[in-house]
Length: 318
Image (cartoon, rainbow, N blue to C red; front, side, top):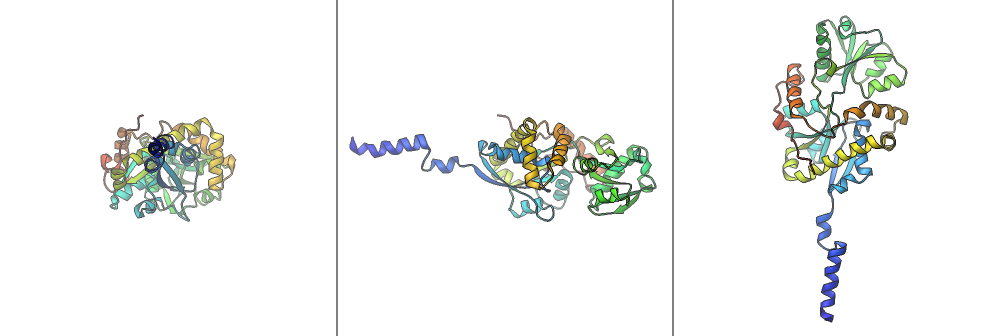
C-alpha cells in the first residue's frame, strides 16, 4: 500500500491541478495582433477582449501591437511579427493584387467609414465642381470622390483635386481646400469637437454598398495551420464588442490610455461607431460581393477580387 501512495498522489495532482503535460495542452496560444493605426474607438473591442480575459477564455493570449511611425500592420503580418492584423478592406484588396495571400476573417465595423467632408458652404456633392478637394494620394480617395459626386449628378472631372497628403483636417480648417475624403468616425468627429461646421457626404449614402471598412486579416498559412487559434481570436473580439457596448466608460479609458487621446474625443468617436459594431465581427457574403463590384468599378482595384479567396467565413457559433 505504501508503494502505491506516490502514484496516487501524482494522479491526484494531474486530475485536480492540471500539472505535468496537461499544463502545455491547456495554455492559451500566444497571438500578436498588429493595429492599422493609433488606437482609436474602432479598436476598443480588441482592448476589451484582453482586459476582460475573453482571449484566454477562447484559448488565445492576445498581445496588441500598435503601429510605429506609420501604419505597418500588413508588413508585420507578412514578416511573421504579427499573427493577425487590422486592415482597411481596400488595403486587403490591394495587398492581394500585389500577390499577398492574406484573408479577411472578421469585421470590426459593418459600414464604410469613408466620406467626403466639406466646409459648411458646400450643400451637396455636385457643388464641389470648380472647387478644391484635397486627396492624400491613396487610390481610394479619388474613388470615393467620384462615387459621391457622380451619385449627385455631378462631373468629377470638374473638381480641382489637389494632393495634400494626410493633412486633411488642417487643410480644411485653414481654407486651403473646400473638402477632402476623410473618415467620418475619426476626422469628422474631431472637426465637430473643435467646433468646425462641416457637411458630410458618406459614401454609402451615395451608392456604395454597406461594406465593412475595417477587417481582421491573417495569412492563408496561418488560417490553414492554426484555424482554431484564428477562430479563438475572432470569438474573443466579438465578445469584446458586447463588452464595449455594455460598458463604454471602460472602453473609453482603454483607448484614451493606449492612444494618448483626450477622453471626451474618444467618447464621441465611440458613440459615432457603436451602432455599426453589430453584428459582432460578422462577414456578410452578399455585401462583400457588392463591395468587390464597387471597388473594381471605381478603380480602387484593377480587377474584381474573388470574395471566396479574399475572405474566410468562419463558423463562430458555440
